[in-house]
Image 1 (cartoon, chains in turn brown, blue):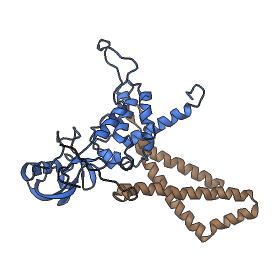
Image 2 (tube, helix red, strand yellow):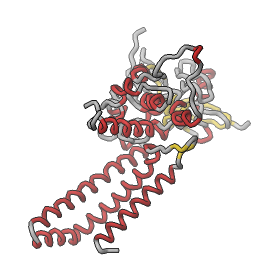
Image 3 (cartoon, chains in turn yellow, brown):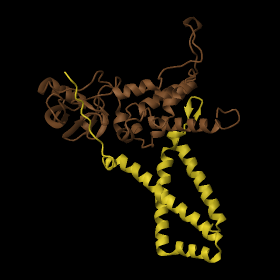
Image 4 (cartoon, helix red, strand yellow):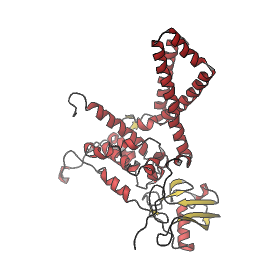
Length: 130
Length: 246
């Protein structure tokens, strides 16, 4: 008897709506767009700094405008989601074996948050905020 | 023992008469300790002997009874009916062609599994008279988790990357390659590299992590793939250093 296997096609545009774990994945991927836009704004700031005090002040005013503030709050929120979702899976990629056991995943995640806190504090001190 | 009457909706596909799959409902009196596989066996024995599905051990060792239960890839023998409502939807594993009913075509996976050389490649062959290849408990621990795979293919069913691009070598095969790469008795990493470190290998994985979430043996294929990415990236960078092969 001849075979006739049936292939079910997966939607290339809406597959991630089929399960909550795929929605979480897409959320964690999409959040990087806001981080990328924020990075471009920062680089643009350096460019404006090079053009002189007025250009720099214009860039600062842009950031302080209502639209600028709303974007930064959004970008900060998404950066936090991005951080949380990546730190959560670090122990899978970073297995540290000591003898016959492995360093607990929570310790590795905790260390990442610790380093994040130290770097953030350093940046805030550098910026004269803390 | 109490029983509960459950409607089991099974995705049927009979290639000799059906153009496409369809759901068929069966009313099954389930004992409280039954698993979905028991319900399928009841259907087969008492209601409809034309239903096709794979199973063997009934104790999550053989890896034969992988199915999708209410949208989630599961072993039929590990999905307890008490954890579900009065209607349970059973489908064949996703991302594989359906041969018949719940039986899928797994030839693609078998080819990929073979392509990663999933066996020990020792530095030098020893005769039996020379004794065992010795290994410490710590060296065993380094790869043991990745040796627990039973090839049930739930990970392939859950992996959207494999669904979108079937050329992806996929979670179980890459996890098994990692299992041998991590084995102190093995020197076959270079022999596996062409397949494992290729675009269709580890670099096709975008770390959705679904494979590890559905794995019934806690193998963590997603972790194995990310660890291989790190090793492969270090190999690439060091190849440019003095003494490297570039």
